[in-house]
Image (cartoon, rainbow, N blue to C red; front, side, top):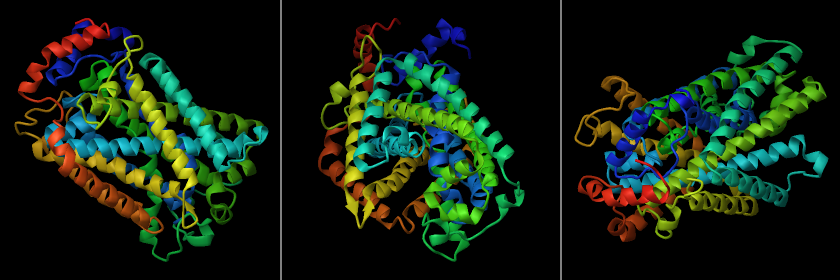
Length: 519
């Protein structure tokens, strides 16, 4: 749908659906279908996770980690995306995951989902921007004396996260303009990178893409521990695609800012995952084929991407590609600020935060953005990065542990509403699907496959050398249960349902009048 195609009738229908769920149209509904796709595509950003975590494709089973492992991992993410899209069409609200789990499950399911998703989004924002800092250190940092020390990384992340927050502060139109550009930039930069790798490759050996070679331990630069179990190593290599192909919940989080949301949001989710999976596979296969010697590259561990580019590409072309990747990574973080702040705003709107809910759910009349939620997300991210870069556990930065925990937190936050939806579909809680829908049988099958996929993700995220991740996640769940039983169960009411929606009519009108929204 082009920007000019959004009719007044469609606008009123979007607002009617939102009112029917008990919420006011406070945010500016100005995102097109493409923009909704672009914000998820920008967060997935194959030029961020796909580049910074590329060694995870080769560091266990060699070229097959790219040629086969990427496909398997993307299929897992695709099941989550399809199941999520079905629910998003029926319940198009900001902070969708939390709202879905509450309506389709119960208050506790929604409350737990909100905290899982918030924790995942804040930490993944930190991980993205730390990755950007290290990428900058390996490319342009030498020109500025930036070598990637802990203090430099913390300062770099603080500055770029603040800039990302400022763009978000200035309005969704500014953000969508940049994420739209990001969508095109990712396609363009990836195309140039792929063509350059294939053209300058010393030789092309396609069989690399399905050949399994044990590069665990020192042979793979220590990316994965030494093991003779190729099945185990293959599962570990799925960390690359599963970590990269995430963040598509951003389309759901911006539902209240998207035109014709019940159609555009599910299409944005599915399209972002499809194109990221396809283009990402082509990209990592091209990089794998361009490597002069796989064994040498594998032994270089986390530096193998830079070593490969240095070995095959002319300096000018290499630096141009690096610049495109760096900008895409910055915009990836910008889109993640959008997603995290909308989740925080939606949860606070229902008084989900123990303190500050009124401020966090406020919307700027001038910019029509949740300004307090934006800057709170930013501060929390920076605090996380300071912690991650300063605390050592057995000689290893806690950042390594928390980044792996992020994967579990995010996918658990996806899984809870999917399980709730599986049981609620066709009942009074969810009597009819939205306008974008698979058949009941296909939807239930896809959801079951996603739940099985969660089991795979949990296994690879806590497998050695990441055993501490299990205790981090278990500790959070225990703490959440204690807080729910002792405090939140009596305080938190969840999103409005039933008679509470009807009683909010006056409050909805007042909220819309405060930001200048016309009915």
